[in-house]
Image 1 (cartoon, rainbow, N blue to C red):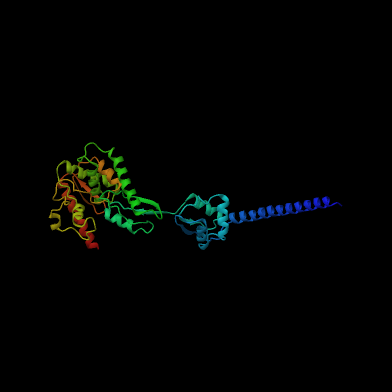
Image 2: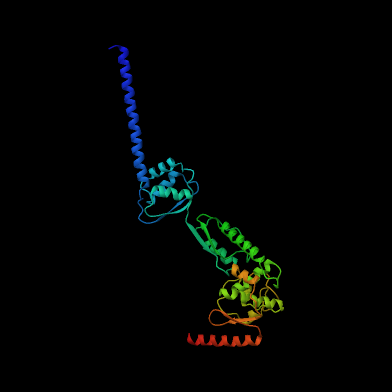
Length: 338
């Protein structure tokens, strides 16, 4: 055998060896990939839901570490490799996530890519003052940042607001202010034409009084009608909640009003002043604003509690006095039963 043929045989042997190694590598990668895919798609180790928080700027490795420590995944390295293999490294979103029991690695990645963060809710109750609502915002631990906005009385719309952890306190208050602006703009265009006031600001003032006078939804238009009728007749509104606001800025009084307080002259005492007080006395809800802008068709000028949580209405002072006497009897019976 010549040297040239021996060299040719050696080269062919070497190439066969390399080809064999290449095939083995492909096979290994294929088998490894199959096992990785199977592991990433099988149910995860969680037996109950767990919450994991990813901060803005967290790396894939940091997220994998947090998920592993929370028991949401078995192998952080597999999470990292799967994210990179799918090309999702730049799509993972910061947020607070509830990882469901049994979630696979694929499920977890999909959840974080879609940004399905946990929603928190803050309820601003109707009839609360601005300071009372701002306290709720300040005390909510899911919100971030210092509260620097200082809206005036009546500038917030009481509703339930959804947000994700980390949203700032100023942002949620701005949402409340924007919602109130949108509500009054919408309702103002559909107001009755014979109202005894001419500006949206006055509508909010009257709506705040309506809000504080009754917690019965169906009564709001009737309460609004009483006050609208009084304004038209130049009668004083004589609303107890306005007196209380002048005394406490809307904080609970904790007792009944004294005669001296009813007679005391303050800018908010509608037993003493004519017309509306200078500002709202609370933040009215949308229904109260709508009632103030579209009062019921009624000639009532008076109302008093009826003992059931609602009120009884009257168009004349004589009828009102009879209703008051009836309420006094109910009060006396309730005291005796108690």
